[in-house]
Length: 125
Image (cartoon, rainbow, N blue to C red):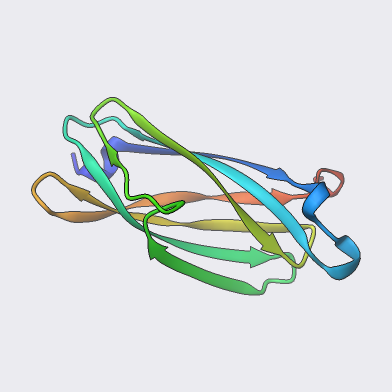
């Protein structure tokens, strides 16, 4: 079994009305991600890639080192959780992507971040 199969990614997103300005097409969302290491070896999160799509289909790509300024090492059986945010121009959109991880032997691999919705509660069908 590959190391990527030994990782679990869960996401929760939340609309932040107090920081949003719908009349200015500014919708702010927070998302909390939990990365669990189900394997037997420690892994380090080196980087991230996001594809953010707004409700009009406009795509924005974001990539960079680490998450929230960290490149955490996740021990076997433990998890790393962080909260970040995204701003889009529509009340609904999606995010998806992957993390670049490194195992103890220095091998890098990607783990997918499943697509999740950014949605203002009143716009969920």
